[in-house]
Length: 480
Image (cartoon, rainbow, N blue to C red):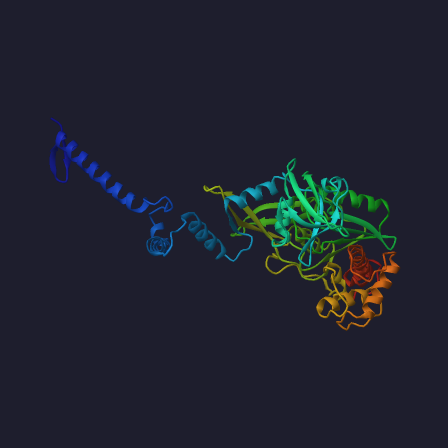
């Protein structure tokens, strides 16, 4: 019979097999007890070795709440709250846990399948006002008009929800329907219609010629086809023989970085545009241009709302000496995010890298510093403020001062008393007369809409940032 040497004694093969089986049984029992203790709860799926100690306090708190809290716990909500707390502790607004419902909405956005009815809406002292109906949109075909106030969407009142929530109700998949009820000026009954959502293309590139010889291009955001539209606009301006270009990136929150890269490849001289590095400084991506240097000077307008993809272009042009920046320091968002699917149907959006300029300079958290920092007067911002309404003679307060400031800015020499007196009403009637509106002295929809348009047109007269850009392009003194 064969024998085996173990622990200094000879053992028969049969005895050895018996001992081995006993050891295996004991080992399995121990493993079962060990795993049952640590993995009995479906939400406590953690790796024990090393991880147990790191998560000890978390699970200790969990157990205390589970056993002693005065109301039953919803484990899923508790778990999502713990994840949110972990993510929020990073202090990175671009890293976030997305529960399943938010993940679904994000995927609709990013796949481009989200559609709408084709209106621009604004918060008008608590009301949702249709500011613009896009040409050829479902909203226009259904009879909705500029100045209509949306009061219900699919039977839900808009009185107690935010503007973003109203916009979310109006959006949806192309081909689906939404019921919209609006209050129209001069009509007591609501106008109700069923609108079929469709894919809506919003213009993001706007161009014109200034002073007969300088090109001006404003980019509002970087969406699909923004790069193509920019290149077409620039080509058209160059055919006009422009002697300089003003690129307006103010209030541009960013968008698709690949669209920004496409634009940079048109106006940044041959060489590097930007690079993407990880936390160890390793280069993950590099983007280059092969364009020839423009024969004309480029000036970029920026402000505190210029962010992300817009900063890639502005930073590259400034870093390469291809353009001057005028305005205010930019927002300072220069990170790249990754979206990871999670087992619960949700997702984790987290930062994995950051953008740098060609020289290796980072602007995240501090923004790009303009070559010429220029403030805009308060009057410039009147175009973005809701026009007061429903004022009655004798009313006082900030709304009255705001209306008086608007009329004064438009050239009506009234005193800013803060009282809605006869003087203010008289100047309002004069404004209506000058613009061929019914001379009612009331802030009706048509009067308020005309005020809004006039303020936007007038704002360019006090746009000191644009004025300085044109001065530089004309070769005048660059001193600020």
